[in-house]
Image 1 (cartoon, rainbow, N blue to C red):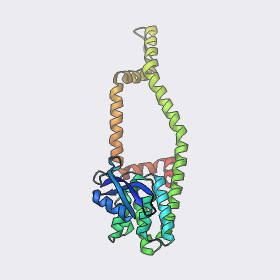
Image 2: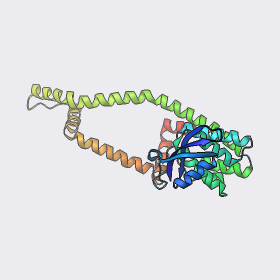
Image 3: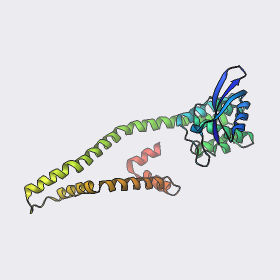
Image 4: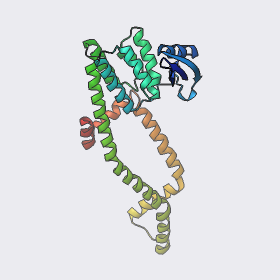
Length: 268
C-alpha cells in the first residue's frame, strides 16, 4: 500500500488537500473521486508510505480515543457505517488511521464485519476492542459498545498518565544515584584505594567490605565497556523474550507475584 498526497477541487469550488492510501495511483484517484472531489495533483508520499508486510503504523492512544468516540456518535445518529468511516478518514489528522481506514472501509463494503476488518491491525485494536465490537455488531448495539470503549480508553489513558507522573520522581532519583555511583566507582574509589594501600604498606590487610568495594571498582574501571555491552545485550534479549508468546506469560506471572506491584497491576 502506498500513501498519496493529493490536491483536488470540491463541489463547492474550494481547494482540498489530503492523503489517501491505495495500491497504485489509479486506485488513489478512484478513492478521491468517491469523496466528491476532482483531483488536480496526486503524488507519491514516501514519508507516509507503509508496507503491510513490514507492520502496521503505530496509532496514538489519543487518536484512537477520538476515533472511537466520533464513530460512536455517528453510528448512534443513524449514519451508515461506511459513510461514518469515510467521514472520519477525511477528518482525522492521524497518519496511521489515514493508512488503515481505507482498507477497513474496503473490507466493510465487501461484506466483512467491522470487527473482522479491525482485527487486521492488532497493535491499534487489541483483542478486547475487537471482541467488544463483535459483540456490539451481533447484538445491534454497536453505538453503545463504542461509547463504552471510548470511555474505558479515556479512563485507561488517565491511569497511565497518573502512573507516569508518579514514576517520574523515582526514576529521576534512580538515574542520579546510578550516575553518582558510577562516578564514585570509576574516579573516586580507585584514588582512595591507592591512598589506603600507600598508608597501610604492603602487609596491610583491608577489611572485607573495603576489599569488595575496591574489587567492584576495579572491575568497572577495567571491564566497564564489556559490562555496558553485556547489560545492553542481555536487556535486549530479555525484552524480546518477555514480549514473545512464550515469554509474556512468564513475565506476567512474575509481575503478579511481586508483593506490592502485583496488587497495583491487578487493580489497574
